[in-house]
View (cartoon, rainbow, N blue to C red):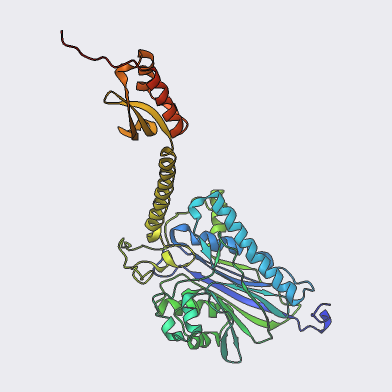
Length: 434
């Protein structure tokens, strides 16, 4: 049985929204993407530096915007199922893009999604973009960051204020990528007229306090609030892209026109480029999100991230191994190859020590242990037993066979071959005085 009451009993609501995305004062490319529509609010913050986080965020928004459609009679579970499905489709699409272009390997994106059904929100969240509710003069953070510093906060090791300046504050533990299909946080929020919603990238919430955001959200239209939040973030020193989506919850009004959906940031740029170039991503420079300082080759052990004086986007997503560990992978691969070769050589040497043949050394017939061959001037056999059979007392035929080497199946077989040669050797000549 559905947990949703009959449609006539539902308080019908609508959203009035605004969205702004700014590349910021440091970066050359905007890797944020935002969307605001009658039934959907979403922000995605691309991660990946040279791996093109802008593609990841734009791809995710393209999949998520399918949620912007009039609601049916979904239950809360069905609403969250649609949100989760859209996030998983974004992952699947990134997998396809990386398969088509391996240079995109390592790209990923956050996603904070608010799907509206006319009376409540189905919220899905991965990463460190955030959703806030401003109600009755107070602001409340709705989502929990999937970051390293958040784990420290949860454990009581640092405070919220300390997290803002922590050297690992940019390190994300969960994101939408082409490797693992991350499970999003999912929950339902009941809303009512007078509520104001904010979805933003960490370029805003990473520098603005809750009090400052609440002050901006307390007045003006959604568009005005979004613009002011971006402006305040840049003035506060944000070095990242900044994206803010603000929406007011209003009572439904059949006479009110349905506002046009807004697409901002990298997703909007991708749409413009498609019309100009004939390809979704063709013609866009593939540089990093900002100028990177040189990364030292000899980093101290135990200092994986704060020892790097570079753009934090280069090491933002934890499951993507930092480049400086590539030498360790190559060293490990080389060690494995050497180990396999050593095991093979050891097995070959052990086998050779059970092989025997009959040959000649210093004019005598000798039983050799090993293989009758040499590699690089190194003999693969050694004398095992010297006999009293002399080569000069053998027939030319037998002597030739000994010089070439007489193969034996084992030591006993080699000893039998020597016995046959001994029985065939000519009697020794004795010198006499004339």
